[in-house]
Structures are given as structure tokens and as C-alpha cells.
Image (tube, rainbow, N blue to C red; front, top):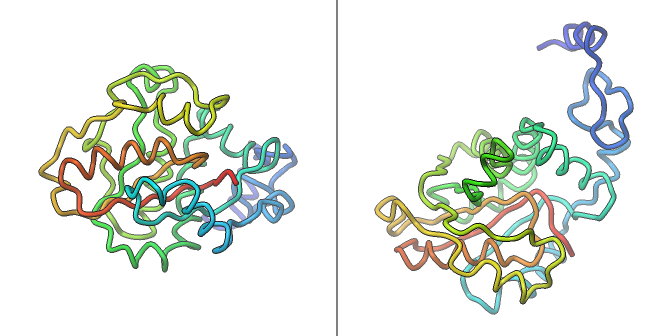
Length: 228
């Protein structure tokens, strides 16, 4: 769509930045330029340190990448909140495309066969109406030309919110929460798990355990945000 047409539509139905609520210019999507540049990228050092703290000990996730640093009450949290709770699911596609743009060279090295969004429990799906990680995965898939499947693993146990839990409590909370329902599809395959934000890594690790147990060759992970 041309910038002129976008400007016309914006005049009729203005778009606003999901973070600061200012009017968006025709060449901006989701967030304004000021908010966009305020979101901090997760550099290689942070990713390396994060892998050692969140994943190395369990030996489940072979490598991971996150695009941005998730900071409380800052721009990325506003974006993720709008995606999860305001039915702005296209924000997920937007974030997935950004992940593909900036992380594609690193993800290509993993030789991924399937992209799998971390699943929600059916009760949460009914409440929210969609899985935000699925739309992030779709955006990434469009950029990387890799298949997405939400029919390989499911969440079979409802878990309480992880927000106030520490790493050990999160690990206990996620035990036996997932089940692989299509093991033939993952046999010998490299799997990329997608989540909106990686905090302690407990959810991704638990998903990875059941995937490896059912025959996956390797499990990798990627997210839009990373909590330091």
C-alpha cells in the first residue's frame, strides 16, 4: 500500500503508537520512531550470558536468540501487553518479521525444520482467543520461509501465571505441562520454539524436554524479548 493511501486511511481512522499513544506517521507501524529507537537490542554478550544462566545446565536448548531486552514499564512491555491482552495479534506478525530481519543469519545456522510456538492451555486460548506466540512465529516464518506448526505439541496442564515466580518455582510450575501429539513429524528434526518473552527459560526448557524425548534431533529457541 502506498504512503499516500496510508495517509488517507490515517486521516479517516488515525493510528496511534501502542506505547506512547501519539499519532503514527504513514511510514511507521505499531510504534512511533521515538519509541522504536528506545527499545534496546539484545547484543551477543547478553545472549551468551543469558544462555549460560537460563539453558546451559539443563542441556535441552542448544542455542537461543532474542531480539530485544524486555524492561518493565518500558516500550517493549507496552507492545507485548497490547499483543497479549488487547487483541492486537498483528503486532505478533510485526515482531516476528523484525526477528527475521535481524536474526535470520543466526537462525539459518541452526538448520531448522519446524517453527513451533509455545502453546497455550485450551482454557487460556478460550479466554484470549489466540496464541500470541503463534503470530510471532508466523511473522518469522514469512521472513525465513520455514513451516510453522501449532499441532505438534500441546499444553495439557493449566499453570498459574509465572509473573511473580522465581526460576525454581517456574520450573516446578511447568513440570508435565506439555505433551507431543505428533511425534512422527519431529523425529530427527531440528525444532525452533518461539515465545514472546523469555524470562527464566523454564517454559521453553520444559517444551524442549518433551520434544527431545519424542525424537527431535535438537531444540532451539527465539523470542521477541529477553529479561536480563
